[in-house]
Image (cartoon, rainbow, N blue to C red):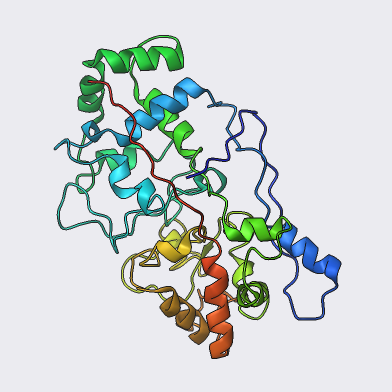
Length: 341
């Protein structure tokens, strides 16, 4: 996957969400502004508390792929976030050490640098705070902090790698978190046909896909949440599908009506090859996703005001799928780094 990494320690300024929907009456300048709002940023926002360094990113990459992070030494971060599967796992629900699996689907890590807070319910405020959640989860990697640190500290190659990244070889939880987060912020969307189109190559996507882009930003109202270069505004919405005990973001705000059954808006980058869909992997295909939105979901107080029956025609649905397929980037094979032993 092509990485759009800048070594600058400047935060990228992302375009704001669209302020209007396409209706068919726009001027060429209006259309140009909409297209421009999806252009990729020039820099990755590394926080001042954890600035970028190559040594730290290289260390984070090794840690990300190392199965020593699981008690059985069979699962790594990459087990659920496989670069060959667009940094997901292609499963309805993630599977860790417990063969029964986890209650939620593993989200892709594409463009994760731009969409904090993280987690389907937003429980992780920063990328640094994510790592030990799955590591210490009995159903996921089932590892303890002391045991993990002992395993890594017993390997001279890791002591050397921590020394290069931090100035000495001490291996600590904050350093593990900082290294993993630094590497994960480099996991960015590759160049897709859509990117070539908005940058001026009018032949990069088909006429049907261009019409689908108008539907996406107009009648279908997709861009009300899936906006900007990552096709996510980072919000939490009830789209009228979730049921059961897991109420998403609402579990942290029990008095909020609107956050009940609200889950994180995912990126749509590489979406055509990242099925199944939704936080619980309950929707098999993109066609099913479009049909779900077309019907409008469960009518309840928490449902987003943008979710309502759309009355899309068969052609509009087909063209919308054609557009979503243009968000898929070429994905060259990713080599697993050599791990210290």
